[in-house]
Image (tube, rainbow, N blue to C red; front, top):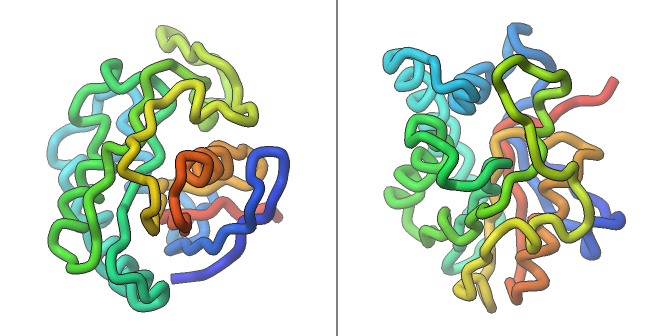
Length: 205
């Protein structure tokens, strides 16, 4: 596992401690966490066996890293939130939400974590930022990221107030600012602290 810091910008008012498991380079390159793309299941077309294999890989990583993060932070209770997918919650099939449900299952097995995986709930579509080109039969509607997009398009549970939050996403991409905005929204909603963790971090060369 690796540690880094997310710096302040127009989306984020407070520097944030962050962790990631491995660099995300490109789909198909050696060592790349390709299972994250499987879990996105964007077109809901992966076979069950491939989805379950990806779930197992994610579980193994989470079990390894979350224990280390808990030890590092030293908080008595850490509320785990997950960055919601870009479209409204009701537009996804359950097999397209396997990242979140896997996080939920793992944290219930590790002491010191509190389940807040549904505390950020997307109700309005936003642009799917990892799809850079137009794709036939896929409507990529919604706005591009802007400061405050999380608060405008999501419901944030009042239970985040006064809590130490670990915000989890599958892939952190510098300069996209979805994660920065989500962190800032949790702070504005009254979170005591927010720490960020992603499985993959896009490397800029």
